[in-house]
Image (cartoon, rainbow, N blue to C red; front, top):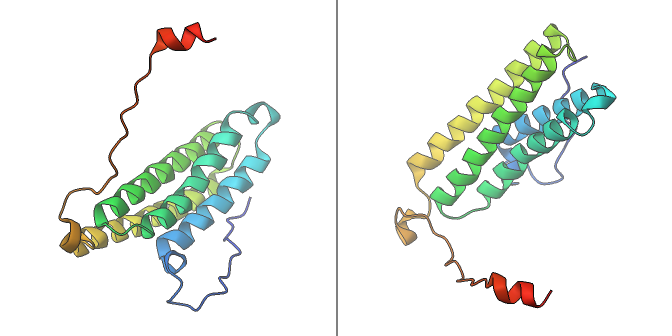
Length: 163
């Protein structure tokens, strides 16, 4: 297997696109492409197990980077970037699993391992940058901004009587 790069070119102007300009986002797309490549080669008995897991968590990484970028308050942004980092590590675990089980060869594994670690380093870099900048704290302070939770009351007895 050969290490792949995502074939994506934004129609937007370079440097003015937003999350698409982030190196961590570009690398996350590369990791996702490779995860899908690995998923295509897995045996049929992994179809509802490793295939689904590696595809799902690899897609979560760029999605959470994009969502975090779109948040105004830095603590909200950091929450999504932390989720992206967790999904990235989950993806790496699935690459390790595929290697240990003999589904991918050592040379490819070493390449995808380094790509994933590079994505993690760039993601850690933007996390540190966001922590330093603290965007949104001038308006909202340093507490996480979140909506009030509605008070739901569930009466199981009444629910079961109407069944």
